[in-house]
Image (tube, rainbow, N blue to C red; front, side, top):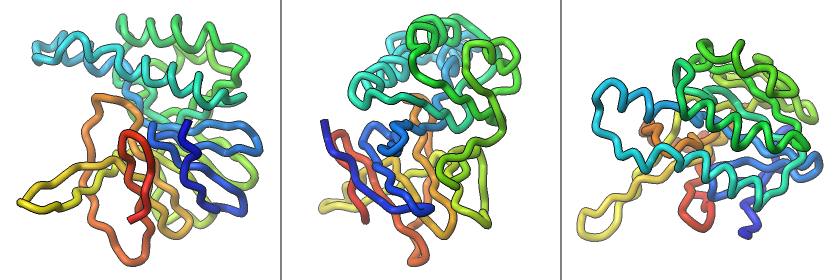
Length: 213
């Protein structure tokens, strides 16, 4: 298992991992955002040609993250689901949440979660609009926070230029002021291109590691 890239934020240590998770080792908490479970089924139902094999990719990824990190708590910082309940959202609850009740599941509602919160809330130890760890707030969306805050929602990516006009796209963590922005965890989420600024720190993910630009 990769050790993760350590950063200090809000007075405590956090580890950024290449699987797009953020780990707080003292509390054995894993934080991730923007899974958008059910999005592929939603698109396929609307006639969009998305490969059926991609439907389980995010669920399988989270299963591996649980096996690797062995968290005692998982905080999902919003947009766990994409829209209304469907077979993929049901599978997520049945295959990941229900069998892992030894883990404390915290679900922070995002703007895409409104249609499913009431249905699936009983499977989680807590549902809320925010959660706090060692004085650090975790929310779905945050801009210019006054206190240390972790959030998702943006799906940040950066493009790196290489020789021969080659460009590669990377999901990234962004640390600027009191804001620590998470990359989207879901496999089928898209990304919002950001331009690094001198006032921030940017950490790109690859298949095997996290690097600071």
